[in-house]
Image (cartoon, rainbow, N blue to C red; front, side, top):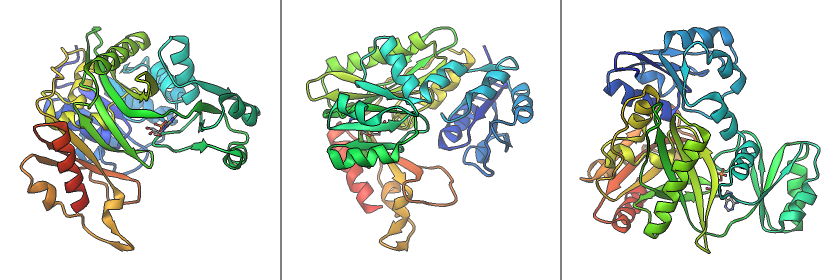
Length: 377
Ligand code: AMP
């Protein structure tokens, strides 16, 4: 067990690192953050911030030697340097987990090989025939780059010959996947924790609404049958075990119009759709991750109240062409509203600047209140 007073290293200094650092410090750990960009959100709340490239083996090794355990909050970290520091400290989740989850092709191939339900796909090599792959899946389909894709980045929906031609032009020479476009009833996610001693626990399943491919609302409890919720939880737990994850793994799922569950993607870290746990659960996803990587007993993930989480994007700072200060008082005045801001200096369109939650006596009521608060920001 890695006990409070020890030092936890976090690779990546964004908002997930910030909330991890805050949870770790609450429990009495020291936190070091490693992030290429200066003055990052996590650095502002940590004991030490190191600014160096992920490929700078010397700095990375020195960082690893100073920490009792190292984890990461960001998926696009090159895996090779991580594998090199693995002998210097404990690294959780192990670098092989990151390698699978950071690339859509490896992720989907892993799902197929391990027989977890997933969206049907075809792999397209760098000099492969994208047109043939699109033909084999048929319209409508989605083309996604294998690397560096998240929040809809690097993906294009293909519905006809025109978008087909555009995809062929846009993706030439890139490793990509073509997958079936799924008509879904709703999107879900489940955040699962697995400790270094093998204990596993799932947070309640969240129902997620995306706008322009970016998470907009997370609703708990998800407004679907108990049977689907249980299935989603069991799927997440089985995946965490099969992948031998220590820490958290978030699994994003589609519920098809036919009621089938299909995995869209996974992330081996705290997840945006799990932010509701900070205000509505006995233990947050961030504390749970710290407990898991330190080998402590896992906390109780049960939710205390129906809750909705809303992302606050940089867009909120702009009113037509004018910039403005968002009307924070609307959230602050609400007795069940909770505001979280990540301390990012510059608001940009599409940038995640913060989030808020609102609790109510039902998911529908919380969603109505959340939509109203959002519209007044
Ligand atoms: P991703 O970057 O893969 O997480 O995609 C972002 C969002 O795009 C998802 O949450 C869905 O709303 C949508 N999306 C991605 N892939 C598909 C698909 N195959 N079928 C339908 N919608 C999709």
